[in-house]
Length: 373
Ligand code: GUN
Ligand code: ZN
Image 1 (tube, protein in one colour):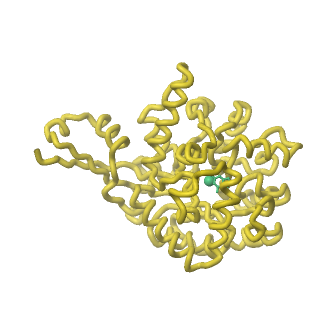
Image 2 (spheres, protein in one colour):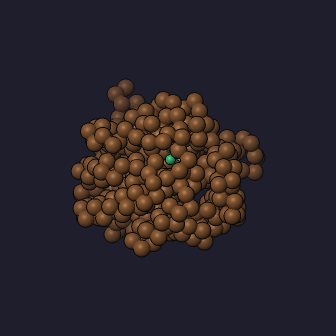
Image 3 (cartoon, helix red, strand yellow):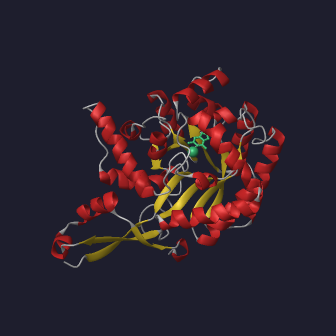
């Protein structure tokens, strides 16, 4: 029988955490735990973005690939290089993707000596990045203050970045509690802080415009602080599994009413697709249910919300995108759905079509943000 194809419009997906600079090695180098992985693979690759031709080539591919996979909004880590980070912003604007772009800040504990900046240079370059990106007046591309994570930043750098974010009312992104060894190291590096969350709290980096990736090992106390501050978590299940970092208990995060979105975390996560992130989030939730009969598995409707509206809330962009509420921009995907049994296909209720699409689907067409109403 000839397949019947129908289509529907859905909100564009929001990738709340992706390293554009790591796209070049995605799908490889997943044989080491986080801290070794960073020093062995990540920092040497990221150091190549001093070369703007290299950066232009990879960043163009990232924009094409994420858009083709239905990501209409992305929160990007670039590298420590200001000019290449500005170029990523320009390419996102050229392609019409809504984006937060971060020049990465790190001044210590890199075993790759050429991949970090002295404090003063990092501060000056961060200010230049913010000034120059804002001067472009891109409609949908904004800077995000980006301390890499507590391990890579001195207390002075964290304080400096907290002040910069506050003075300029900017978004903030970083990593938190991804891997047990990392959590232990942060305790040693910041002995005066009660927890990993307390490190960011004490440095004014936990605001209602903050998104922290991972959070696998956050305690209930820490989740309460996230809720009180209005800070968000980006759940990156592909990365958590690929680097064997941990499994975020999404149900517990939602019960604490902490803003939550999904992230691909390329290249810790090997896939740039948000549908993949959604599927891995469902898988992780099911594994947690296998381990604990009391665990309430994530529904596909909840996973869909995390990939769209939840992501826009996590990035504090839900006044502009995330669903088709009147007054928001029309960030939309045209999704196809086909069946070899046409009559069966048309008798499906929309909920079944959505579930099938989330589990098996692909994206056909993306309405660019430029078509916003
Ligand atoms: N923690 C600090 N930097 C990184 C990074 O690049 N990827 C991941 N997954 N975790 C990090
Ligand atoms: Zn990351």
